[in-house]
Image (cartoon, rainbow, N blue to C red; front, side, top):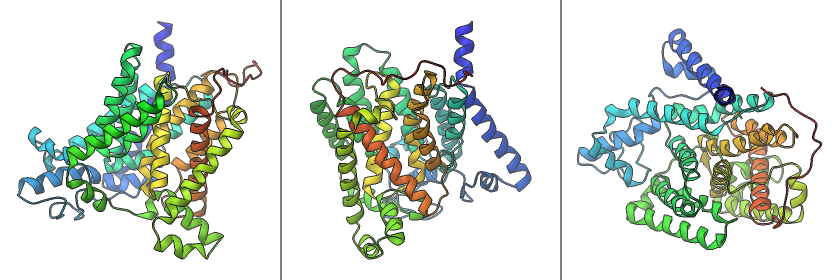
Length: 413
């Protein structure tokens, strides 16, 4: 009985966060005359239509059923967007999905995401509980829910997938992990970078390269000639984005003004600068790996939460280098937050607290191009690269967690 009570109490911060969001939205809908206005209570830039990104799929199915090509025309989309997802999503029409299914699909994804949070987060200290609560109610997460964006589903499938995989025999895990990454890549392109989870395993580099190659090949086979259109149709709004382009643009505007025209007129400049910054971070991780252990817990590839954290961090770093991604993609940092909370749960050190706060500040930063937002963005990128590098590439063969005083630093929930 005590076991189940402890299990439930560690999930109370997630439940409290979900109840808080639902309650505020319900009250806001009643007092402000609609759900779109209720989202403003959380400072979410809502649109008149519910689950706008979900509509990109369901209305594109309407377009296809009407004999038109949603990759070429935006006739049926409320904002006249061109379809920017892999073609596999259009196969949902065979299950009877149309624009009338939008609200049901959007609500279902939100519920699945809440379920993923309940599985992922365990808070056994007061500090951990506060971190979990503010992570789940952060602006980036609520932005994904309001838009009904597919990223929340991809994140949830990572969570459920890895927890299921790590219930299986050890020998079956690499194959199942590879299949999960291939499947998610077919759905949303970028999960192929999660192959980094193999790097600490035996022949890990070969497994990672093979998984990434198979994922890209599967995406090319399922998307075919639509793949270039998929990238070309992907919308961008730098005021609602994170990544190398808004980061270096904002930095240049406040420091090296001569670099601003280069960044604006050469879209490869920012990604190249991000790659250089990432390489420097990896070098620092190689030199100061022991010091990094004192401020960040080494990522463990032999646990589900460790794999989820690695996958989320690699996706974040890829999205940052790529140039610009909407802030709802920051939801993948929640895997790292959960891993940091697990370290806080040990109740012997506060080393993970600064990193958790830094990520929380980015998750809750205002949705506009600003100095503070981009500083946080760049700091989390550097931290993520150094953390991954220290854990995956430069970790000694025999390595224990850095010793800390054994006195309790936190009070249990």
